[in-house]
Amino acid sequence: AGDYTPLSTVNIFVKDLGIVLDAARKLAVPLPLAAAAHQLYLGTAGAGHGQEDDSAVIKLYAALSGITLPAAKDTP
Image 1 (cartoon, one colour):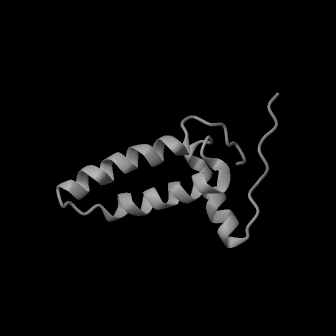
Image 2 (tube, rainbow, N blue to C red):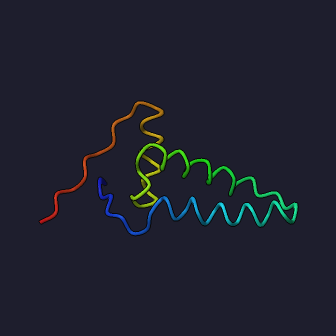
Image 3 (tube, rainbow, N blue to C red):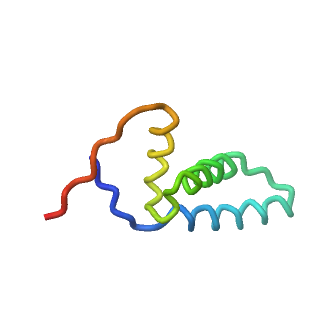
């Protein structure tokens, strides 16, 4: 718990899901779960976590619900 080392970034998920949703829209294909995920990543990026790993979405949930997440682990 508490390891938030970036492996990819939220901003990349926003971009990629945007591309997927644009393509689906042109084909009139509904992607409700992808749309919901896109909104979560947009919110996370908007909260200042765009350069963090996709696990940063939990920080948005924490902020919205008022919970405190475990602190990041110290690196040796």
